Image 1 (tube, rainbow, N blue to C red):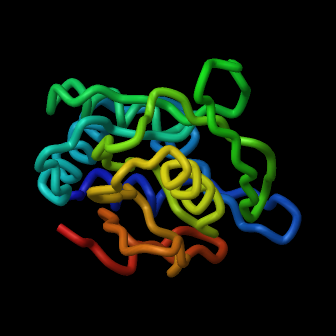
Image 2: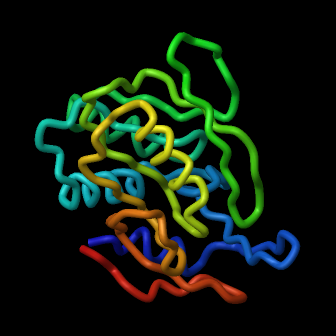
Length: 182
Protein backbone atom coordinates (compact mmCIF):
# COMPACT_ATOMS: atom_id res chain seq x y z
CA UNK A 1 0.00 0.00 0.00
CA UNK A 2 1.08 3.59 -0.66
CA UNK A 3 3.41 2.61 -3.52
CA UNK A 4 2.04 5.34 -5.82
CA UNK A 5 2.41 7.96 -3.10
CA UNK A 6 5.97 6.92 -2.26
CA UNK A 7 7.11 6.78 -5.89
CA UNK A 8 5.48 10.10 -6.76
CA UNK A 9 7.08 11.83 -3.77
CA UNK A 10 10.55 10.41 -4.36
CA UNK A 11 10.52 11.55 -8.00
CA UNK A 12 8.87 14.98 -7.65
CA UNK A 13 10.63 18.25 -8.60
CA UNK A 14 12.07 20.68 -6.03
CA UNK A 15 12.35 24.47 -5.85
CA UNK A 16 13.83 26.90 -3.33
CA UNK A 17 11.65 29.49 -1.59
CA UNK A 18 14.26 31.51 0.25
CA UNK A 19 16.02 28.97 2.47
CA UNK A 20 13.09 26.55 2.29
CA UNK A 21 13.37 23.45 0.05
CA UNK A 22 9.88 23.12 -1.40
CA UNK A 23 8.77 19.93 -3.12
CA UNK A 24 6.24 20.17 -5.97
CA UNK A 25 3.79 17.31 -5.92
CA UNK A 26 0.34 16.68 -7.43
CA UNK A 27 -1.19 15.95 -4.02
CA UNK A 28 0.26 19.03 -2.30
CA UNK A 29 0.29 21.50 -5.22
CA UNK A 30 -2.11 20.14 -7.82
CA UNK A 31 0.53 20.21 -10.55
CA UNK A 32 1.36 18.91 -13.01
CA UNK A 33 -1.74 16.64 -12.79
CA UNK A 34 -3.47 14.71 -10.03
CA UNK A 35 -3.68 11.00 -10.82
CA UNK A 36 -7.05 9.54 -9.71
CA UNK A 37 -5.30 6.32 -8.65
CA UNK A 38 -3.03 8.32 -6.32
CA UNK A 39 -6.05 10.05 -4.76
CA UNK A 40 -7.83 6.69 -4.31
CA UNK A 41 -4.73 5.23 -2.65
CA UNK A 42 -4.38 8.19 -0.27
CA UNK A 43 -8.08 8.32 0.63
CA UNK A 44 -8.37 4.56 1.10
CA UNK A 45 -5.36 4.73 3.42
CA UNK A 46 -6.89 7.58 5.41
CA UNK A 47 -10.19 5.72 5.84
CA UNK A 48 -8.19 2.79 7.26
CA UNK A 49 -6.29 5.05 9.69
CA UNK A 50 -9.04 7.41 10.87
CA UNK A 51 -11.42 7.00 13.77
CA UNK A 52 -14.69 8.03 12.10
CA UNK A 53 -16.96 6.90 14.94
CA UNK A 54 -19.70 9.49 15.44
CA UNK A 55 -17.98 12.07 13.23
CA UNK A 56 -20.28 14.88 12.04
CA UNK A 57 -17.90 16.72 9.68
CA UNK A 58 -14.64 16.48 7.79
CA UNK A 59 -12.64 19.71 8.07
CA UNK A 60 -10.01 20.61 5.48
CA UNK A 61 -7.90 23.67 4.74
CA UNK A 62 -7.92 25.54 1.44
CA UNK A 63 -6.59 24.73 -1.04
CA UNK A 64 -4.88 21.37 -1.22
CA UNK A 65 -6.91 19.61 1.45
CA UNK A 66 -10.05 20.10 -0.63
CA UNK A 67 -9.58 17.32 -3.16
CA UNK A 68 -8.67 14.76 -0.49
CA UNK A 69 -11.56 15.83 1.76
CA UNK A 70 -14.03 15.76 -1.14
CA UNK A 71 -13.21 12.17 -1.96
CA UNK A 72 -13.29 11.16 1.72
CA UNK A 73 -16.65 12.86 2.10
CA UNK A 74 -17.98 10.91 -0.89
CA UNK A 75 -16.53 7.63 0.43
CA UNK A 76 -17.90 8.06 3.97
CA UNK A 77 -21.05 10.21 3.48
CA UNK A 78 -19.66 12.63 6.09
CA UNK A 79 -20.20 16.31 5.15
CA UNK A 80 -17.10 18.46 4.61
CA UNK A 81 -16.30 22.08 5.40
CA UNK A 82 -13.32 24.10 4.24
CA UNK A 83 -11.24 26.53 6.28
CA UNK A 84 -10.79 29.34 3.76
CA UNK A 85 -8.12 31.98 3.13
CA UNK A 86 -10.71 34.74 2.72
CA UNK A 87 -13.59 35.92 4.80
CA UNK A 88 -17.22 35.37 3.91
CA UNK A 89 -18.49 37.34 6.93
CA UNK A 90 -21.10 34.71 7.72
CA UNK A 91 -22.60 34.65 11.23
CA UNK A 92 -20.30 32.69 13.54
CA UNK A 93 -17.27 32.89 11.22
CA UNK A 94 -14.02 32.33 13.15
CA UNK A 95 -10.82 34.07 12.02
CA UNK A 96 -7.35 32.89 13.13
CA UNK A 97 -3.81 33.79 12.11
CA UNK A 98 -1.61 31.22 10.36
CA UNK A 99 2.19 31.22 9.97
CA UNK A 100 4.02 28.51 8.03
CA UNK A 101 7.58 28.07 6.78
CA UNK A 102 6.79 30.02 3.62
CA UNK A 103 3.62 32.11 4.21
CA UNK A 104 1.37 33.78 6.75
CA UNK A 105 -2.12 35.19 6.80
CA UNK A 106 -5.64 34.82 8.13
CA UNK A 107 -7.80 31.71 7.86
CA UNK A 108 -11.59 31.62 8.27
CA UNK A 109 -13.74 28.77 9.55
CA UNK A 110 -17.47 28.50 8.88
CA UNK A 111 -19.98 25.70 9.38
CA UNK A 112 -18.54 24.13 12.55
CA UNK A 113 -20.46 24.51 15.80
CA UNK A 114 -20.31 23.67 19.48
CA UNK A 115 -20.58 19.94 20.01
CA UNK A 116 -19.63 18.96 16.46
CA UNK A 117 -17.33 15.92 16.30
CA UNK A 118 -14.87 16.45 13.46
CA UNK A 119 -11.89 14.88 11.73
CA UNK A 120 -9.19 17.04 10.18
CA UNK A 121 -7.69 16.08 6.84
CA UNK A 122 -4.78 17.79 5.10
CA UNK A 123 -2.28 17.13 2.36
CA UNK A 124 0.96 17.96 4.19
CA UNK A 125 2.23 19.12 7.56
CA UNK A 126 5.66 20.78 7.53
CA UNK A 127 5.87 23.44 10.23
CA UNK A 128 2.49 22.78 11.85
CA UNK A 129 1.43 26.43 11.52
CA UNK A 130 -1.70 25.81 9.48
CA UNK A 131 -2.78 22.90 11.67
CA UNK A 132 -2.28 24.88 14.90
CA UNK A 133 -4.43 27.69 13.46
CA UNK A 134 -7.17 25.24 12.46
CA UNK A 135 -7.12 23.56 15.88
CA UNK A 136 -7.41 26.98 17.53
CA UNK A 137 -10.45 27.82 15.39
CA UNK A 138 -12.09 24.48 16.19
CA UNK A 139 -11.50 25.06 19.91
CA UNK A 140 -13.12 28.49 19.64
CA UNK A 141 -16.07 26.87 17.81
CA UNK A 142 -16.45 24.32 20.62
CA UNK A 143 -15.94 21.32 18.33
CA UNK A 144 -14.42 18.02 19.41
CA UNK A 145 -11.54 16.82 17.23
CA UNK A 146 -11.91 13.05 16.94
CA UNK A 147 -8.86 12.50 14.75
CA UNK A 148 -6.31 14.20 12.48
CA UNK A 149 -4.80 12.59 9.39
CA UNK A 150 -2.21 14.12 7.08
CA UNK A 151 -1.14 12.50 3.82
CA UNK A 152 2.51 13.66 4.03
CA UNK A 153 4.39 14.47 7.23
CA UNK A 154 7.58 16.50 6.75
CA UNK A 155 9.76 16.14 9.84
CA UNK A 156 8.18 16.09 13.30
CA UNK A 157 6.12 19.27 13.63
CA UNK A 158 4.32 19.79 16.94
CA UNK A 159 0.70 20.75 16.33
CA UNK A 160 -0.28 20.53 20.00
CA UNK A 161 -1.99 17.13 19.76
CA UNK A 162 -1.39 13.67 18.28
CA UNK A 163 -1.96 13.14 14.56
CA UNK A 164 -1.60 10.41 11.99
CA UNK A 165 0.13 10.50 8.63
CA UNK A 166 0.36 8.12 5.71
CA UNK A 167 4.06 8.76 5.14
CA UNK A 168 6.87 10.70 6.74
CA UNK A 169 9.45 12.39 4.53
CA UNK A 170 12.79 14.14 4.77
CA UNK A 171 13.64 16.80 2.23
CA UNK A 172 17.10 17.84 1.09
CA UNK A 173 17.80 18.25 -2.61
CA UNK A 174 15.04 15.65 -3.10
CA UNK A 175 12.29 13.92 -1.15
CA UNK A 176 13.04 10.75 0.82
CA UNK A 177 10.17 8.71 2.26
CA UNK A 178 11.57 7.57 5.60
CA UNK A 179 8.42 5.96 7.07
CA UNK A 180 5.22 4.39 5.77
CA UNK A 181 2.45 4.25 8.32
CA UNK A 182 0.29 1.67 6.52
